[in-house]
Length: 595
Ligand SMILES: C[C@H](O)[C@@H](O)[C@@H](O)C(=O)CO
Ligand SMILES: [Mn+2]
Image 1 (cartoon, rainbow, N blue to C red):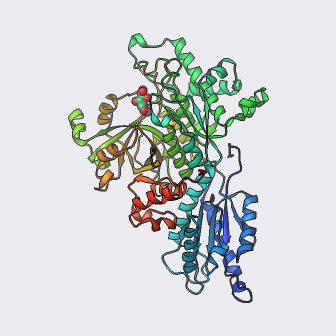
Image 2 (image 1 turned 60 degrees about the vertical axis):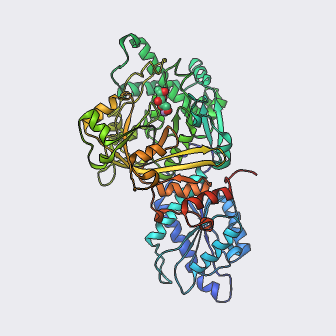
Image 3 (image 1 turned 180 degrees about the vertical axis):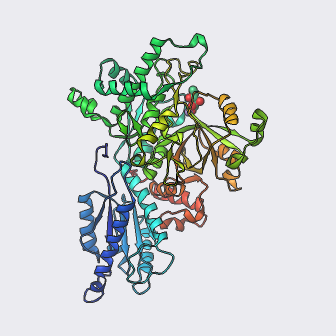
């Protein structure tokens, strides 16, 4: 397990704040306050991991913070230690603005212990008023039930909020300073593939890097890849990636020599795209230092259609393998690599990956199938979760093989797990449940191999998407729901009406009878673009928290109001949560934008 990007992993800073009155009050609290910080740190280190697998690291201030000097000492320590998210904790009254964390770029929360002997919760209210007055949005955490003064346990509702805040805060920190790698540029007029470097820079702290697709040809032609890894990768591919039926018209079918060439090319493309993203020390040894350094890319996309795919094998294999949690080198952290260079779908994939540590599905949000239409074309009824209609998620390339639903959670349910929990057998099953048919040459003149599978199980998932709206900026949409397994007869008829060489996921969003979630049809009708990013698990509430940190308003979601956790200042923008979110995001503006 290793962080493969340049830059240290961001740490969580814990700030124990205290009533600074020495000569009785402070002394009576010092131990308890520091204990609260230590128990928070232990809880965090035991429960959270970075996407690269390491346990999250905490740093605690050297002393409790009773006033501005100790606040400055703490800020100094945090800077040296690489703290990027801060959690202030206290069971007692402290001096609001005197002990605050004033770094505007660090996501921050204050946990005020709900006791009444020493009023932590009343400090919390004073502190949050100060943060709001100074334009430093901060999350307030305060347990529902009063605890006894000596109680060092963390109640469940507080635990949930701490984890939600930190997952989102660490996602903000992990992406900051990294790159989006655009291989090629705009694909078939898809607006999301007209990569907006100002959006990436201002909202995410990510630089957009552009590499023309000819660089891939150069590296293939000049042998700028690790030849020994290529041999290993090709042998592994031959053994583990079974070729599917060639559904091209006979006159369009490639001959065996061409097919062999295409396999070799797509394997080389995979190595090269990965090297472009994160570099490769082997290339440096080979004398290609510039290439070997890579581009520090935490996400990327491949234009493909059409200039590349009209001429060369498509990148479906490359994208699918990079987005999976395993390859010829074994089980590893998945990459985030969008097809059609749809950067606005790569971003929610990155959000999902950093929040859940799992591989992500990229898909066209292709068809809404009503129960009546399914009945008409198959003669059969949709049942179970699917009974009110389904959305067909399908696309060439990019869908992670983890989405075959061959991994199992602790209870034996289908799952997509963080890579360190995936077993060799599970990875093998994902591969065994995938075929690789030749690309349909009417679409892909240069050929290539698409992954073909269906998501064989019911899993909780969350679909999300960023859209850029002129005059507003980015907005995020979120739909929690489930993948569903259809009767094979229904699946076959519906799948064959589309492109049966591609991976299929049947999705049912959770509906609630109102607005965009009135029914399944309305979810599809309200989706802002042709693509969706689908993450394992119900992570909608985490996405909402993350979006608020990045000042990206959420335009559509089906999360219960009780789970919406945003900086306390949002309440000052009105009671109706969607409107207040837009106003708050507009007021604070992008996190990294220089105005
Ligand atoms: C082959 C086609 O051009 C597909 O790539 C197309 O349906 C899309 O995926 C559009 O996003
Ligand atoms: Mn597409």
